[in-house]
Image (cartoon, rainbow over all chains, first blue to last red; front, side):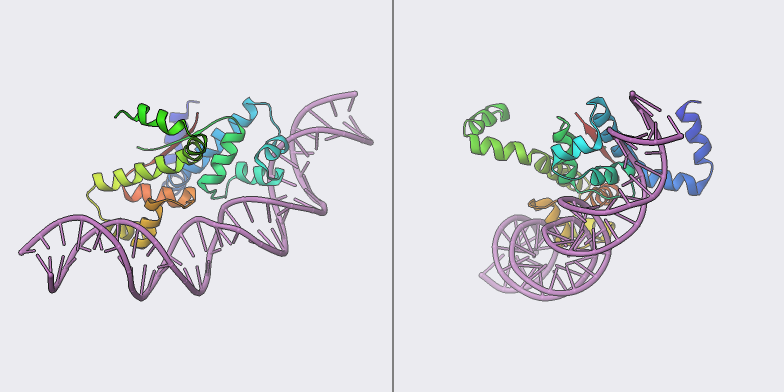
Length: 89
Length: 89
DNA sequence: GAGTATCATATCTTATATGATATAATTATA
DNA sequence: TATAATTATATCATATAAGATATGATACTC
């Protein structure tokens, strides 16, 4: 199934649609970071060491229900040899 | 003077270059938010009311030396009828 | 230049992000 | 299937974000 289709079905329930809309950014950010880590073939532990934190904290970031600061995201991004681009659209 | 030129001069001092590089994201984000607010002809007070916070907190965001959370930035963006796009590049 | 609007700064309180450790759950490998 | 590797979850301590109020500094307007 195409995502557009799945999204249409999900949106038909107002509560689901609302939850999706409100958490769009969070999940997009999580996906970006997980993808970047996997692309570099790093474990959470390895990334944690590069960042200077613990594996559990990387897991917390990647698992959601979390509101990271811009600086923390920036640190993780740099450990992944990336830079954050943030735009208002 | 073109920015590229100014940047070249600034970069010639390693300490200045380092400070610039480290704070690039912060200043870019600040500029985005200030521009979006001005474009909508809102005062900090008006934006604060829309966000549900105080004028001083908007000023704190726009004045730097601050490490906002993703959620706070998202709230402000939405009050400005914008959405945050965050990418790793 | 007095009065007003806007923004910056200082400071307090409270909520929560982050560092940290331990351990459970899950997945990969032999 | 047992062992190891990896990830998720729980929890505590500490640092700090964010709400809030007050007031100082700057810029407009009359």
